[in-house]
Length: 439
Image (cartoon, rainbow, N blue to C red; front, top):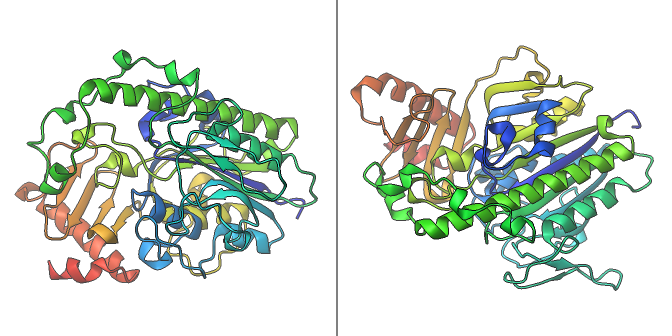
């Protein structure tokens, strides 16, 4: 086991692709996060299967679609018999742990997760089910859960959750052990409420925040998107975006501290380091806030993986990969067999620059809203039961304002992608199969 790599997954909440400079973002300089892409791989077309917290997290850790792992909408508990990548590594002799937001154990808030519900993450002392508080304090008595504060109370460099979780991660890394470790830290930022601690709270000026032009009109929107418009007025939107950028900058600085801890312990190159998020944030695009809609910004998120032993520095994986593919991919990269229940595909060959018979698609599943779709390098097609459907050219229309669904010039594209969507849903026995076929 001493030759096996460690695995560290840094997972944020609601962090958009545009917020990281390695992804082309210009508002926040994120050198520590960028270093994972520069010294490893960046997946430029990585999509979350469902752009909302609970089902997305379930897909990541199990390699199964939401209807299969059971947590198909927020605040549902994942099936208790699911096999996570942590469980597989625990069975292989790994020291496993988890800190931060879990959101796979039902409604309890804050709901610090009990030891026997860690789903393979054996040390889950700092795993909490829900919450986006801005201050957490250690309780001095051994075995007592940490103390959380109301949302309006903001912590400092030791009690703000991003800092606090980074410290817990470093403590786990620095433990003496004679086995490899697997640790996942799930930072609850930059999810709202959009505020952070000083000096990050004032690091970005609202007047410097660009706003998306698509916020200005709803003429281009289907009915379901019009009904979801909730963006505040421009001054409040600029302030929210400035705070969001501050949250992202603090996350990046804490990524730097975690990487330094690995470096100082002499195990950085023996550790697979992953950075990703559960979904993105619209921040005013199309008049929308949050996630849970079909536009690309909520689905496409950063994904960087660093491991010099098998991943060449500067690798760019352009193929479409879904969050449901993460579990089999990371285990495949490590040379560890999956349990056989996974529905995602192993993309580890792509990370290593090898040819692979990859389908180059990522599917959208959203059982609770009756939505199903597909991303390809060229298009996004999505169906909404009893509502308007969408087809966008990802290359010609990155802002997604020109809905091509119903355009006779694109009927061949629609037919081809529809066939793939229906065949996929049928193959994985998704509940959308029935209404897709009926349409």
